[in-house]
Structures are given as C-alpha cells and as structure tokens.
Image 1 (cartoon, helix red, strand yellow):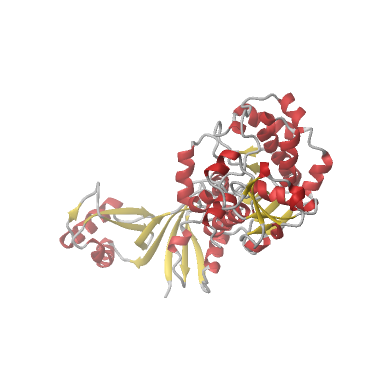
Image 2 (spheres, rainbow, N blue to C red):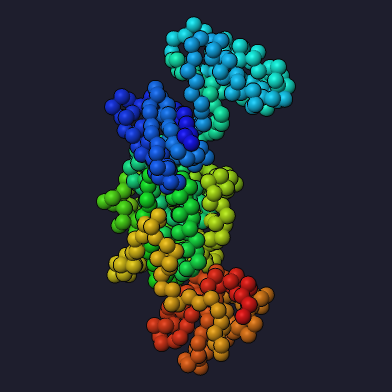
Length: 478
C-alpha cells in the first residue's frame, strides 16, 4: 500500500531568499527521511510542489511527521486528475460522501494556477453535491471539514489533515549546549531552541543522585526520539559532588546557590567555546533566588562565558512551562527528577554585585575545577543506555544488608517525623565505633548521602548511599 502526503512547511521557509531556501528544504527532507527510516519505510519519494512537499511512502507516518520541526500541516491525500469543474466535483464528491453522512460540514478550497472556475465555484458546487447526504452546511462550526487543494490539472483531496509543530528544521541554525537537569524547565527550554532549528546537545551535572541522572538521561531520550529527528545529541555528564562539598564548606551561605550557577556557566564555557554557538538554560526571571536579574547578570560576568546565553523561558511563569512540558511529553518524567538537596537552606541573596560574587567564586581553587572537568563523560543519546550514564554505581545500594547500621543525615525534625526503623540520627553517631560495620546512609533524595558515602570511603569506611534517599526507603520492604 502506498500512502500519499501533502506537507505544508512552516510559513518562514517559502519566503527565505532564493539562495538559502533550498538549504531549508534539503534539511527538512533529510529529517523527514530519518522518520521514515526509523519506522521501517523501505520505499519513499519526495517532490517539491511550489512551496509544499509531496511524499509517497509504503508506511503510515502521518502522526510522526507532525512532530518534525519545519512541518506546519500534514495531510494524507488522494490525487484526482480532472477535466473540468463538473468532473472535479463528481470525483471529489464520491470520495467525500462517507465523511459527511449525517453530519454538518463545510468545504474549504484552495486553488493555484489558471482555471475556468474559482475556488468559490468549487466550494459551492461541491457543497451542493454533498448536502443531500449530510445534516446540512455549517461554515462556522462544522462537524467535518472537506479540504481540497487544486494545483493545475490535479486536485489533492485531504482524507486526513493534522497540524504540525512548525518552527525551523533542526540543523539550519547551528549548535547549542543545553544546561540540562532533566527537571521541568531545562527540557522545555531545549525543545523551544530546537524548534528554531538548533542542534541541541545536553550538559548534565551529576549532583549525587544516580536516579536523578538516570531520569535526566531518560528525558533527553524522550526529546530525542519524539522530536529531534535528524539529530543524535551528545549527553555530557560532569560530576559536581566534590564542588558541592567544597562550596558548602568554604562559601558564605547566602552566596552558595549563585556561586554554583556561576561554576556551571564556567564549566559550560570550557566545553562549549570551540564547538557551539550558544548556551541554553531553563532560567526564568525571578523563579528562584539565583534567577533574579541581578544574580543572572553577575553570574554571567563572573563566569567569563563568552558565548551568548539563550533563555527561551525567560518571560514564562511556572504554569506556562508546565503546559509546554505536558505538550512535549516530558512532564511525567521531569516531575520525578526533583530538586537536589539544598546547599543554602536559608538567607539566599537575591541581589549581589559582580565584585561580591567574584570574591566568593574565586575561593574555588583551579586544581579543583581541573579535577571536576576530568570527570567529563560523553555519551550519545540514541546509542547509549542508562547503564552507561550512572557514575560510580558501587556506592549506591537499593537494599539494607544484614547487620548494617543505617544512618539518617536529615535534620532532627525530619528524623523525628519519620525514619527508617532502627536508623540512627547522624548527630548521635560516633563513627569511630563503627569502623568494622557496613554503613547505609540516606538523606532526602540521595544526593548528600552519596557525597558523604564517598568521603567516608576515603577514610576507610564501608559506606553506601541508599538509592533515592528517604523517599526510596519509605517504599523499601526487605
């Protein structure tokens, strides 16, 4: 069986200059070809008809092509050759009877070329032909719309017509590196930039939670397989756990979050400078204390980042971002990622000067930054698996070994409200008495406990971090 589609490209493509327009069509056709190959099409062909693309394929990809950036509308069509208006109405009418039976309908006609009739003539005659089979004509709120597009001696009758995503084809507007937590904001920001033709690669900072990193990679895969046709993104992972520990120990509490953001910008600059045109973030003005205009500006200056930072969400509120996350299919997974354990639980500065931030940021020694950069791992989203992503899996545990000592790292109030049966609060523990024991640590989500388990191992302890922290332990049953 052969499926025929007429693809309406984004309105921007046909009005590009004659020099650049062929490139946009060429890239769009390449990306559509990726969809066809991914879903197993072995026989397909393209033809550019004026500003549209006619596609024939041996498999049905109508819904999938609607997610290719650069496609505004896509319809499954029948081609009808006709000799005159009467012949056209008869042939189209026979195909449309089944669609309008007992329903209110409207006829929408577009016409290109020289004919002895107008679009209005076709709509009027076709409407009269179909009316006896229908519940009547309703041009304002029809139950069914009959779409016909006439180009020269051929009419395209739309059997199905759906909206596409629009935008520009991926690969027409350079490369950008997305700072990617996998939470609610960064995937939406990456999607919006990709919608404008940008090839997106992901930079993820591991902050102590293997589950959060696995989820972030899963979100990246979701974006890639559902939307990023024609592109195999890279997924960079940098281990920030040592930096988090250093910042908590050496940086003033009210500066920590912005210092951490500045460090992320700085590390991104080291990766992005030679290969990328911009850095993408999911920041929105005022959404958090580190995202005030003053703090964003100071972090950018102090980081020394030379590339432009693009913030597609800068003017959106959280509800608008969530609506987009639901639309693109990342909401469910992103909502599981959660926030990392706080490094500044109180008194976060919402407005700091460049000089103040620089004084705090320069407390981070260069050798530590070099060490952090040495943890860089580069994966390909389409070809790598979750098992390729997790850093140092030997520290993470998903069960409580027999005769082990469980230690709760949360504050005392959280411990008193609920703790794992038999768990000790960290403030009452004498570690020297536990040298020969197996220790299982947990915090809220597994971030801090991972870092503390690593530090304790360096001191000779047999320590583990329970996966997903207290949340995981609540669901755990031996």
